[in-house]
Amino acid sequence: MASTANRTFGDAASCRRSSVYLLAGSMTGMMWQDTAGRRGADLAAAASEQASTVDRPMDIAAIAAEVAAAVGLAEGESGVRDVLLAVARSEPVATSQIGRAAELPVPIVTAVCNELRKRGVIDRTRPVRLTAQARAALAADGSRLDPECPCCGGLGLRVPDELAVLGEELEAAAAGAPQARMELDQTHCTVPAKIRRVLKLHQAGALAGRRIVLLGDDDLIAIAIARFAATRGIAPARLTVIDTDPAVLGWIGTQVEGAGIDVELAEHDLRSPLPASLTGGFDVACTDPPYTVPGARLFLSRAVSALAARPGQHVFFSFGARRPAESLETQRLIAGLGLVVRSVTAGFNSYLGAGILAGTSNLYHLRTTAETAPLVDGEYLGPLYTADTRAAQNRPYRCVSCGSVYLVGRAGPGERAPDWRQIKDLQAAGCPACAGTTFLPMPRRARLPGQ
Image (cartoon, rainbow, N blue to C red; front, side):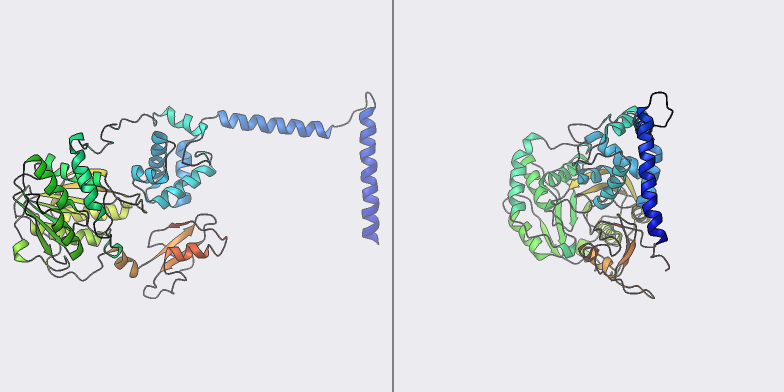
């Protein structure tokens, strides 16, 4: 009764107060506070503050630090700035193209862009573009000035028009090639990439009269070399393909018939040492190994074993951009082999299908020294392909929407079994906490809270 009466009389009192204020407002000279007027003034002040915020220069440095922390970016603030630079120079731009320019996996680029959208740097439309305020902030430091060569796209060479017929021939050869075998990390490079690789050899003096070995050739570079050499009236002294896939070797054999260039085809699994006939007899080695550091170590070791033991021999090594820890490991690997880096061309190779690495890889031109020696001599029994390394590992993933962390993969020693074997399983199920479907890979050493 008491609460009901209080509510009833309170409502009546409220009505009386409203009536008094209305009456006061109608009486000349009577002082009262206009609540509607105050509300309008507050809105005007808020609008003024918002306008001044828009007019204020955007603090890109602070935002880059915030985003790097939010994403857990191993590249730090510099990685965020690389993304912004790629957007500023090419907007509107697809995330795959940003990934190529910034050398970051596409899921990482997506996560960075989502955080930048929250902070008003990236517009909410697609493809990716800057907001007007961010564009003005980046223009102040010259980020929109792009000095890249418009002719070669920063790759250091172009495909001459006179090779158009060669391109058509290679398109036909690629169309009938065996399907890429994902379990062997096969992903076919594009025809322009095939021609660029051959031109790189030609430019370096590593083609005419040279003994060339290709360690793995699902990209059909042997066909490109043979056809190019025939059209230019030159020839390598020896051209050999070593591959574990008989279908690839068979197709190469049919496609080089009549080219006037002898191509030696050797079916061999590089887990085993090279036979004597393929050891120490080449001047140039080309390899596009599996997408793992162990794969690079094995293939480069076999490449070194194939080369004649003297300084200055050529190794052309195609390998995708990696996160900082793996990139450092790859560089240590190159130094450990006694090889020196002549050049690295980012994004030199393009592949069919974008993929997580944005469909590109870098081309390393390496040279041998007096200290060059393989790191793997005998039989290799460790993990090699991507599937091998994934089968023995797990990784924490963080939900982009709510920050929850989940372990994906197989259980390690002393670990509980993850609920999801692959990231696609977690994506299909959705985040248990918020139902989100976008997850960011974390360093393998990171673990779930409480572990």
